Length: 229
Image 1 (spheres, rainbow, N blue to C red):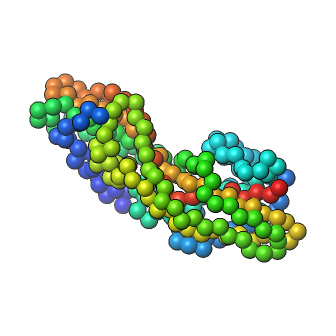
Image 2 (image 1 turned 180 degrees about the horizontal axis):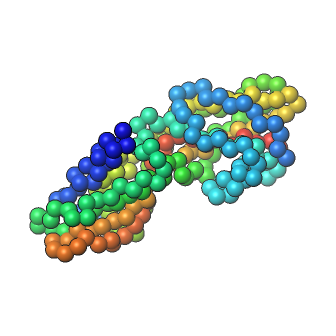
Image 3 (image 1 turned 90 degrees about the vertical axis):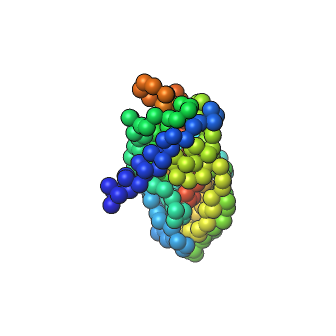
């Protein structure tokens, strides 16, 4: 299956050959259940891991006194273009067909699934135990990209196999059981898969060479932070 996927991905990059560039205090951990189609890909319950995650992603909870308990990441995008293993590198052919007329750009990329969490809060809810509380997300979240040299969104979209200039729906629900004598809060943030880019120029003669770098990000789901006050 991996070989088939790798062949397909490489085919997308080869397709670019000959296309000229346009030169552009912790309480008890609650049980968690997903109430809508999706897949839980990250579950952190250790307080130190949760704090490290929030610091790494630059997430500030909405209350100064907030004590984070857990982090859960849910992927809801059924068309998410994510390989079976994190860090897979998809490279252009190092001896590509020579361009006809003009040099062109070729894109090499490394996929890092669900490796970026947005800092903007999508939704929040709180409730006392014993009861069950839930939160939902129904948003169209914008994809995007940033490069060190001018590259068109059309070129990047063709190379990556998805449109870097559009929004993607993130729809799902999440609920958890609140233990007795406990007040829990849920805060929800967007989750992205990152594509780290290496930009090559293929000249009329000679060896292709690197001219720039960058990254593209695609929304694929949401992350829930559970905390107390």
